[in-house]
Amino acid sequence: MDKEQIDSYLLAGKINFEALELGSKLIKPGASMISVLDQIEAFIKSKGAELAFPAQISLNSTAAHFCPAADDVILNENDVVKLDVGVCVNGYIADAARTFDLSRNGANKELIAASRSALNNALKLIRPGVPIGDIGKEIHETIKAAGFTPIRNLSGHGLGKYMIHSPPSIPNVETGIQSMLRENQVIAIEPFATNGAGLVYEGGTATVFSLVEEKPVRSPIAKQILGDIKKFNGLPFTTRWFIPKYGVASTQLALRDLKALGIISSHPPLIEKQKGLVAQFEHSVIVKEKPIVYTRLD
Image (cartoon, rainbow, N blue to C red; front, top):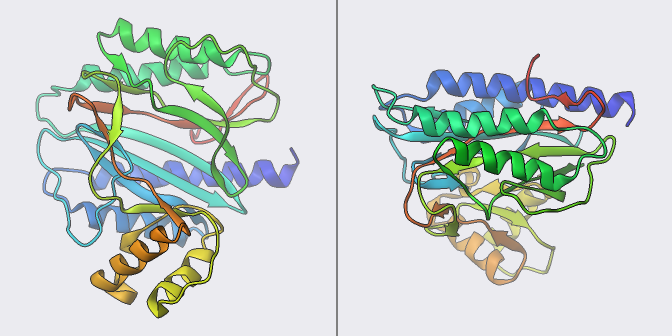
């Protein structure tokens, strides 16, 4: 890994950290989710970076992949709010997340602490030659010791150039996987803790999509939106980005047509099976003998 790559990762991580700090100030009862996400995304772009994926806020039993489109969502007291942010610099990606408890009495602080502790404990293991299964075991044991359940069908992942998900998968439960971390691998570790069943399913309306392959398109609006999608370099995008230019109805129709043609794939919200509350923390790491957790500023 050369200096240009490392510098790009470090800059992406710094911007990601600052975007999450901004989010921590904006996320409060009564806040508009669209306003919060728009401000975070505008901040990232103002720093000269790209969005690695749409900034996302997932509430309560929704674990991930929620972005409002035309209909706004207002944050409420007692919400458990997960903010997931991705930043891309020269193709190199920083992916990090935090969870916020909007209850006045800290009712969900133990759940949130379980996810945060699992991440911190997992990061202590990172170095070349460590079996990936050991990371999942540490996450699993930390969350279970706190009285909660890890979500077993969500995992951390590798990060590639213009690739938000690449090998290896980093489990959140004990799997016994013996394949080992390698020098200069770039990974995102993201423990999800819940007071529910520990499983998620896809539910609700998808507003997050990614390009699968280009094909001929007849619809003029779909053709224009596909042209815009190609500018994202294969990274995920959201319905909300097209509405100011094309309107709600045309955007939704075009995305539906593109999905039906197999040009894009959808990523619906991920919801906990028993509607349990979900907490998430995430950092991105360059694997070295002294790992670089580049979405932290320390």
